Each structure stands twice: as C-alpha cells, then as structure tokens.
Length: 249
Length: 249
DNA sequence: TAGTGGTCTAGACCACATT
DNA sequence: ATGTGGTCTAGACCACTAC
Image (tube, rainbow over all chains, first blue to last red; front, side, top):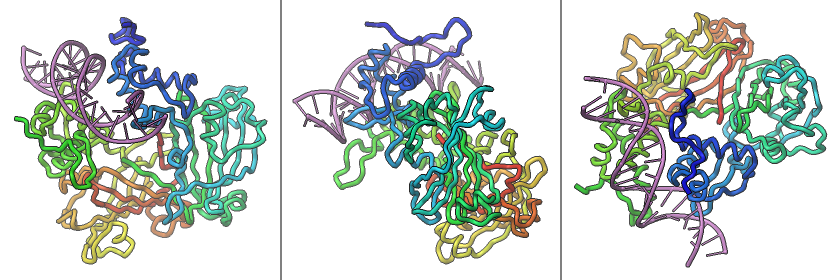
C-alpha cells in the first residue's frame, strides 16, 4: 500500500509548494471542521494516521504537535490525541482577559439582558463581512465576578452561522463551548481593540458606576477554525477595580 | 569522543528530569546571556553544536527550533542560525501595541521629558522586586505618531542592571535595542495591565487632550532572557484616535 | 561548488496511563 | 501486559544562499 493522499513535488502550475507535514496539518483541521472527529473525541494513533495519509509516522507527529501548540488538539502521554474542547478552566480563561486587581484570575457569571434577531447596522455588517440580506442575533449580557458587575457585553452573531439560536430558550454561561457543541464553530482567534471612554446612562446602570466615569471599551472580532468571522462584540468594563491583562512574548 | 555535557537519566536525588533537547535549549540560552554569541552573530551549525554538546544533530535541531519560535534565535535557510537582534521593524512592533484607528501600525518617535536617578517609591520597588538600597533610573518620554502626541511613558529601570545609564548624554528611540546593545539585556516577555482613567493636568498638557478626558493607562513589567525584572513602565495614552491592539490565539 | 537549514523517513527505546 | 505519546538517533535528500 503506497498510495499517498498528498503531493511531495512542486505542482506544474505555479501553485505554492506545501511540505507534507503542512498538508497533513491542514487536512486534519479540515476533517475536524467536517466533524469526522468531534470535540473531546480521540484520533487514531500516529501510525494509523500515517498509513491512512501515506506518509511516515514522524511527519504525522510533526503535524499533530503543531496543532497541539495552536490548541486545536490536546495530547496526553499514554492516553491519546484528542480534539480540544472549549471546556475546563484553562480553555475558558484563554479568551477572558479581565482580572480583578490584586486577585487571581476568575471566571465571571453571566446574566442575559437582551436577546433578539436584528437587521445589522452598517457598521456591524461591515465588521462581520455580511451580505445585504444577512441578519444578526443580538445578545446582551452582564458579567459578574464575585456577584459584582464588571462587564457589559453586546454580542452580534451572524444568523447564517447560528441557525435557530434565536429560538433557544436557555443559554449557558460558557458561550464559546456552546458555539462548539451546538453549531460546530470552534473559536480559534480573536482580535481586541481597546479604548477608554466615559460611562453613559446604560453603562452606569449596569456596571454600578456614575455617568461620566472613565471605563474601558473594547471590541472583539472572533474567527472560527476555518477562518470564518463568527462574532463581533462591543464590551464596556468597569476599570476601577479590574484591568485587562496582556502577556506578550 | 563520546563525552556528553548532559544527563539522559533521572538524577538520583529528586531533581526534575529534563529531556536532552530541553537541556540544550537552556544551555544555549545561558551561553547567549553570557555573551558567547552576541546579538546578530551566527552560531556554529547543527552538527558542530551536536558534537560539542555530545547529542545528535536532531536533538540540537529541536532545541534551536524551539528557541526560534520564542524569538531568541533567527534561522535562515542556506545561511545560518543567528542570535536575534531587537532591530528591524518586525522586532520593534512586537512590543508596541498602540495603533491609530483605521491605519496600519506605525512606529512612533520619542521625545525625552525627564531623565534622572531616583530613590524608588515603595510601589516601584515592590513591582521591580528591589532591595532597600537599590536606586532606579527614571525616564519620561512623549511618543508621537505622525507628529501627534499619543503616549506618555514613565519608565523605571533598576540602576544595578543599567550601570552608568544615567550619565549617558544621548538615548535612541528604540530603547529595547539599546538595552540589548549596551547592557546585554534582551527583552523577552512583558505583562501589561490596562485601565481607563481621566486625564490630569500633566496628561492633558502632554497628550493635547482636556483635563478629565478618558484616557488609557497601562503598566508594563518587562523581563529579560534570564528572567530578571528589568523595567517597569506607567503609560498614559490618548484613546480618541488610537487603540491598544491584542491578538489572541 | 560548498555550506547551511528544511524535510522526510525508519527504528529503538522510554514514560505514562489503563486494563 | 498493552497501547499510547515522548525522546533520541542516524541518514538520505532537498532548497536556498553565497561565493
């Protein structure tokens, strides 16, 4: 059995050459997007995948390790290789940057304020790269750490990627895990843009600060595993006792 | 010649076992800290290093690739492996997160406002983990993008790590490269904590905003290659036309 | 042409978790 | 005892750069 799924040679057209391990990496990602393996499930071992793809075990290994670094997979010695699930504290902290001053990071509770289907404003449609007829689901939440409100989230989701979401009666706190379980959308990358602004009446009511107090505002664009833009958020945060934490290396 | 610099066995005491590639990685880092190779210089090739360390070429390769990912080394096919230098636009953008709205990222100019040796406040000394007798060099700068002030930096440097700095007549814009060249301190990691606040008189004068306007404030703790805390900054930024950009993945 | 890093393979052995 | 990923090695060949 010598059949290889992949090409190891420069294609005759001018297409970019990709090394085998890169092709394996993209193929495995594609198989996850197509749900051959679902979040939490175990993949076949390195030798089985190597045979299926027609490459050596070492090449599969390199691809799987790269995907582990980018948090698409989780590997456990003596156990197996698994599709990462957006559950467990580690995965949840990953995209929640707000921390109470002089405290360890902590996950907030969520309280829903609004939840409805909308026609997007021009700005929202542009940010999410929507067509003229696309609708968005608008979800507004208040987040609390130790029962104190710290964050007001306005979330815009393209309805086409979340069919039926606006008719669901209950939503869990951990939205990113919910996207993954119910809509096969795994959050992969986010871009936050942070500014300072003054609290308006709505901010003041929800965050228990005074109108005019300086607060943090940040927008977030979220991309799924396959690169689709799946979420736009506008966040307002108290910043008297909380800060946005960034580690660069 | 079979002598290995490293141990491949669990040490009899309870010390943590480290795989060979990890030992090589730490040893190479240590050699850079000790200036066996300076920033910009080329290392011996993989086989020469393998012989020197008494391991195989593949093991050296794994260590060098990891150090390349963490930006300590730069590898160029057909050329060699080099100690990274904090120069070149890429390296400079790496730690400057402020971007003008709707513009491509751009590097700011710097204008020095203050520069003197100080006894640190209790807060500064705690942040930098200083002893009772340690002094700090205080440097205040105004940063401008397209000739417009956007950022006011108050920088605190432990004098013990920057001997003679406070007597130098000229400082370049690119401080991190300057630390590396003159004090053998390579910036490796930073932690920023971002808040919103209101402009005071000093902020207003330097950033050309009104007293009371909401502005971004962020502190930065900086660590060198060997893990030493080498810098604490308190930054104030205009945020009307600028934002702090964070990409998570 | 020579020297470098990049890719790919094959195989031995170790460490860890589960049964 | 079995099966998994983790480490380490050795060697062949390719791609890029410089001289």
